[in-house]
Length: 549
Image (cartoon, rainbow, N blue to C red):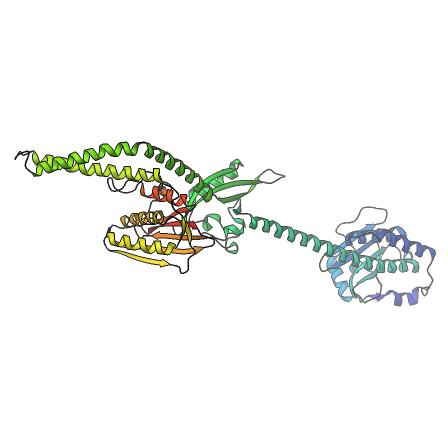
């Protein structure tokens, strides 16, 4: 391709010099074009209006406006004479790219051979190219094709060059406007995304979302925190079954498949255990998401709500009702039962004395009689211990409450337990925080509850172990813990251990009233009794008491 010849040099031999005056036609064209571009805010619209205006005003066979901007890309528009429809695929893109590299600044020129033409249309024999200068660089051009050289008059050239200047200015402004709009839209989208994410993070529930490939696409903050939390960055895009590997794979997959298949919301109650043995109750909801257009289930939202407080409150109400019923029963019948039990015990002891004195001679049945009388007496005393436990319910009162130092009560209880020598190889430890706040409580009842918990702890360590008494301040309350290293409590039994007459001990070794009495005492003191346990690793009972302040 020959080097481009400037329009000015070409016209030195073939065209008269341009006049500096502006004709009425040119003025009207510039005015009309300026008015049409005044409110045009998209670069593509600017290119289209400029190309159509030049085609209409001149005898051009084809007119095109082509510009390439970094943040938008190639923008082009072309019209052929006599046709109001824009042309598609009209540009030799490679030639145009080369043209931008060699196009001299501020110089319009002609292309006179078909192998040099920038436009693919077969409607012209000459192209007039006027560069578009944006921010000091040639970013595009107006390309006007003519059938005859005589149609490209001096006036037409001036109109085209003037249109090029107006187009460059308008495209530059509209491109900045477009970029600003895009930036604003992107910022709005990003702000909306952050706002949505902040809402999900602020909700007091655990939320994650998976797609149909079981990949995690959303993971809120409550899924990050806690003992079982996992950082968001380490799970997004991963397989949900790989991330939640501790949950039963088959059961979890069935839940998701059911949600995708039925499109129905499903609520499931679950229970997990932390590393320290604390049981957490969850209400898990599987919520399908539908595509508005196709109606297809595209995602499933999983919402996990910690309902431990609610479940424990329900259990507490149930236990309170049972305790009240037992208390009413005890108040009415304990004395009536104790009297015949005392008579039975006394008669058994009297008969045993007569047997020992030889009142029944040397009969071979005397030994059996002695054994049976011993059983009657021991079982009568066992019944009495049960009725005495029931009597504790009927007598349970707030007691004489006054500010006490719970640390002293704990140390005294530890000494009493040590003197009982109930179990062998028991190592007793005290972990008491200094300067604990006082609590309003009945000292005797507090000691009774702590000793009952310690006795149970020792029974849970038949082969020996460590019994720890612990006390510390926590916000506006004092926490007392009795911890053992015994065999632990099965998860299914944890919710029932405070119920009257429920025991995990062997028959004859426990009445099932000790923990129920403890629960009643702590509840009467406006406190809370909790438990956490790991089978094979031990159990910790925690007493939460409001401090004096």
